[in-house]
Image (cartoon, rainbow, N blue to C red; front, top):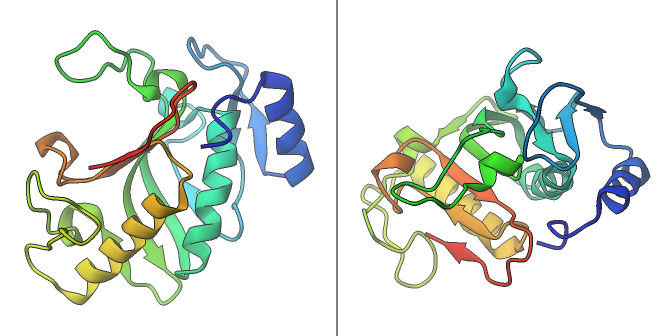
Length: 196
């Protein structure tokens, strides 16, 4: 959460200090304050996002810093690859509202699956086993079918939520539109965090 309000110069300085594998993106990126693309692994974790020719692979440098923190959490679970549906969506809005999604600013990631070092894949669509409207984490959390992979994925998602890296963690429990991915975002000026 601490990255969302960084100035452009402070964000760029932190990217350099960390030596993160990012490159400036010079193409159109309306809404993104400091557009970049990932060019390598973060802490040994590969983020497979849409390629160089796709607008959906761009992100703001603030999200790059948040993803580096996320990689630290994933590293502890032997995650080596993260499959990303999209990062930037230039005209994204919240469903049924005029409010812009954080995807519009390159401050959100839609994560569809993760692969562990032993080759095990944790797929959000296949393994989350959501209960619509139910709490994904905490004492009231339930899993529709508590397979080993479902429990592993849920534990990891809840650790990500507890880490405080992101303002919003939306899971398949949130609504049907999230049945196949986790939405993680940071938001400038936000003071609260939600896990749904």
